[in-house]
Length: 232
Ligand code: GRF
Image (cartoon, rainbow, N blue to C red; front, side, top):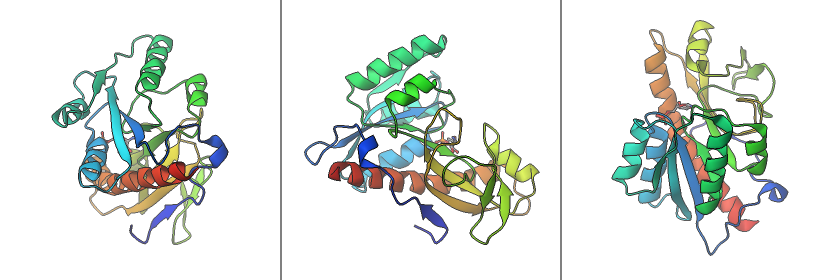
């Protein structure tokens, strides 16, 4: 990992891990995607390369039938599901049942564009990770982030975090892997890394560089989760 990556020390507090993952059984993850799925691909590649020895992708779910992420999953023969998201409560109930059926230990939101209810999140406390393309404070909440060189920058949340960073003229933004809580983009941080904004960056070029960083952050977050949960 690069010098600017930072990892929270207690990634998986024992009392909050209700997964049945153990030494005998691989960690079963569900990856939820709505778009290109490059982060899903990073996990697939890491598993195929033997970098996540005790992890398997149990299921890939998308709320979009045409998500490229679904095609990636199918190419690798992963169980793949298109779940239309018309009535929210009904869709969440279906997803819960499916996750249970597939004995999923950990849910990864990798470009998933739906917000879950507090009730859904509570059932999977500390078992849902999200990727956010900006820097979040360690506890998740708050409106200021202090960068590695001591500069205070605003916290950018929501759908347009990459554009917000560009519009704010900050020099650094980044990516964060965090646990999902009822407050959007505000859960406890698992790990994050800074990405310098370059002159001439557009939302696309900057987001692409952020994605390169988040691919390895996500793999490392899952690797550590799997090690910690197999010991608890
Ligand atoms: C990532 O930048 C992630 O931070 C954000 O959505 C993007 C998903 O990219 N939540 P991809 O679909 O994995 O390529």
